[in-house]
Amino acid sequence: MKPTTVIFVLLSLLVLSLACAEKEPVTHNPDDTDSSLVPDAILHGATINLSDRGQVKTKIVAEKIVEFHAIDSFMAYEVDVVGFDSLGRATGSLIGDSAVIHKVSGLMDVFGKVVLNSKNGYKLQSEYLRWDSKTDRIETYLFVRITREEEWATGVGFEADQEINRFKILHDAKGTLVGGGTLEEL
Image 1 (cartoon, rainbow, N blue to C red):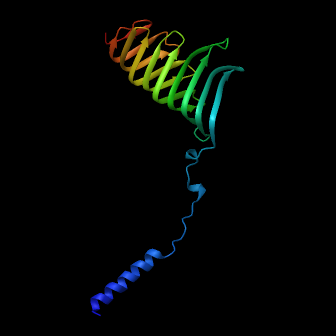
Image 2 (tube, rainbow, N blue to C red):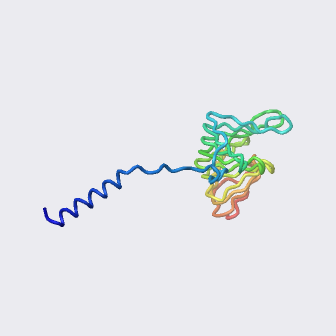
Image 3 (spheres, rainbow, N blue to C red):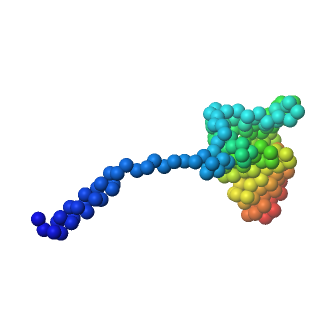
């Protein structure tokens, strides 16, 4: 056998023995993990009722809700939200693919295919919407389409009260919808 063949065989055996050697298991120290990234609860088919003085103001239904105590937030998937007035009547609905609900600030950021229907007949569509439950305001910085019967408006950026009684499209506004809104670019 040639010396180069012997060296090749020995090196091959060395590589194989190192590759097949048992590796030390990786240990995980829980203290090294950011606790805000670890969910405290995961709920499937969940409903959250937000109330004020014992009266339900908002009902949030989601396919899945993940709660994070450390950052005071919930992550909800396949979200369906219904608002109620002081007599318990539905005032509108909001659906989206997902949402982040911030408990203390009262903010809810809804993502994906977002559709908001108000009790006065407006339908708003966007890919993102922020609802502030403390001020009862909604807004988006993305493209928005709002319709009511045969009227419509589109643009980029939107601000309104949650009932869409008064609204403003911020940029590139187009459309026939005037209702209670302002199309700033028309």
